[in-house]
Length: 376
Image 1 (tube, rainbow, N blue to C red):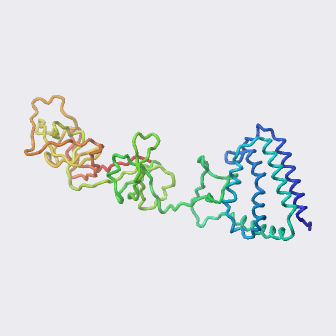
Image 2 (tube, helix red, strand yellow):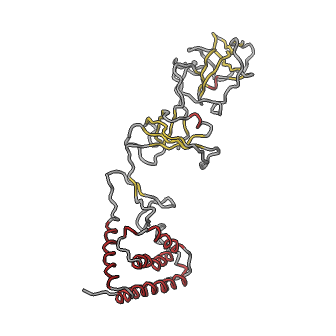
Image 3 (cartoon, rainbow, N blue to C red):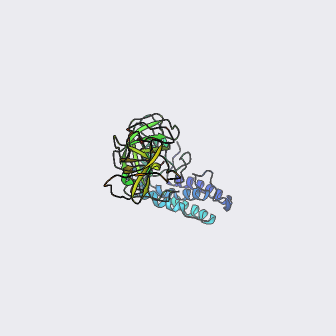
């Protein structure tokens, strides 16, 4: 077995470093920015890494560290990695390889037998640490690899460090949530626990039940959005094998529910001087009927008085209104009609009280129309 003392280690290191310097000098400077893959180091960064890597060993041995668990890796490698990223010319890199290499060789030359004994112990510790780099999943399941800063999945040649040590995650598919964004005008209608019907763009026929679990306190400006939106998280009630992380969903949030109410389509209601009217079929003619309205959503509005289930109303005012009589509700005060979808509108779900009549004159019946949240 060949014995390696301090002088022998220094000589071996000088030989290796000489070869590295020769390679660095032979590479044209215009190739120093070359990357074999987007995630890898450039030639210049690799040479800087080679030049600076002995600093870790100098740090360990100069402090006579025998337990690697006591090393603050972030404190040691932070400055080294920062030095690696500094731009340097070819001449500067070659000089750094020579200078730093000779410093480390001189350090090796001065090692005593006791130092070498500590090195052997440290080698065993490093081998133990190396073996711990075999990452094993704690349970079977889908693996999602961590991505680089540019969005690309980490793979062969990627780097990890002590403060960003996650390699991959195993999502719990039994607990899925949908992330969506709601316009600032509509967010005040939301509250925790509201029921949600979630559908998948990949399979529109699939409907999943969920509930609102989180509403952001602060709005944000999303790309291609003119107004601020608030992030809303929805927990899926029942696991489904169709769901996969990253799928696009549509979310219909039920902001309110009014049972046993009468409603008409929004287009059937006209407003004049603060009063709301519908044009109601009466025998062979049409009557302009004043109505008292209530809550509304994007499609329908509740009618409290003025029409009854089974009445037929027009979806648009007649072109010629001459000869049409007006029926008013005594004592009804004028109000400002809310704008559909506006800040004064209140989105609700209105169950049907009576079946709808055939077009073009539908009956004054309700229909389920939960307020849809924006698609994620």
